[in-house]
Amino acid sequence: MSETIALTAFTEKGRALAGRLAKALGGSVRGMDQPLADWTSESFAACDALVFVGAAGIAVRSIAPYLQSKAADPAVICLDESGRYVIPILSGHLGGANALARRLAALTGGEAVITTATDLNGRFAVDLWAKRQDMALLQPERIKNVSAKILRGETVTIDCPWPVVGPAPELTRLGRGADVVVSYRTQEGGALQLVPRVLTLGIGCKRGTGADTLEAAFQTFCAERGIVPEAIESAASIDLKRDEAGLSRFCQAHGWALRFYSAGELRGAPGEFTASAFVERVTGVDNVCERAAMLGAGKRLIEKKYALGGVTFALAERQREYDWSWQDG
Image (tube, rainbow, N blue to C red; front, side, top):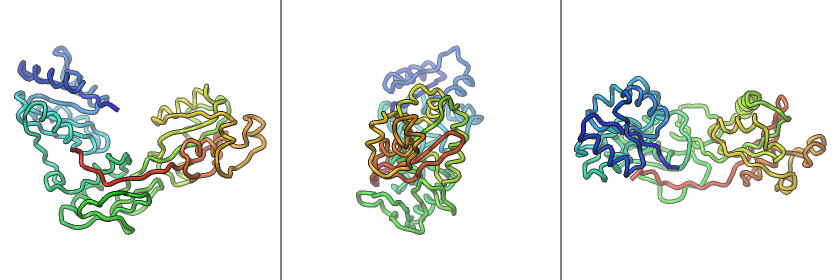
């Protein structure tokens, strides 16, 4: 997925540099007639990265009203109009500001001024690892606990039930009693939780079911079964539901790809499923949600049929292997 980069500058020389960088990166430059406040508001909400060519103070004051968290904020970078110093000032890791600063410095012939402690000391960064491995990060405020332990020279333990190949970085190991837990189940305790995106949600519903009804049932399902919603990467159903607007809107709101299978394809799903004579009479197959989830993920069914208010859900997990790659370059 390509990133969206918005640039702004405040002098003629700076605008010339911003134009060259935008061309190289596929970004856009703020028009002279657009107020800076409007540009910042729009870009902060819509873009992956904001680049200010000019004084750092202008950048800081401009973005201050919109700061949320390191898990949500875009990358923000400031560089002088000569391109000599390129400084990531927000979302260095999760937002990719450090990596983008290095790219910009390579384009300008300047220096990326990285201030993140784990980068400076060449230590493992758990938030970068989560990003590289496509895991959601639930408690960004706990990142500092893990990083501080590593910077003190202490080993952090990561509890990951999936294979992690390759040599572990210095001061990290796999095991229980962990500082970091990789799981799609809700967890208690003070560990930082990383959520693997490995689940497919199988969905069945009555004709005409609205997105709000689906969402309410989904939230109850996740709460009762102890599932972290961020673990779901896709959804699946029977092709009879292809024209269901509510189902489509529900999945779009979560950013899930929605796949459809014919009754024949669903009947061929491997495994044992919760059969319903009524569902078979209506759809031509004895179960939709469990079979669709299995076809979408393929490894194993982790949550069997859950029914609420005319909606059925099931969850299946796909095969996944991780590695120790974490550095952003």
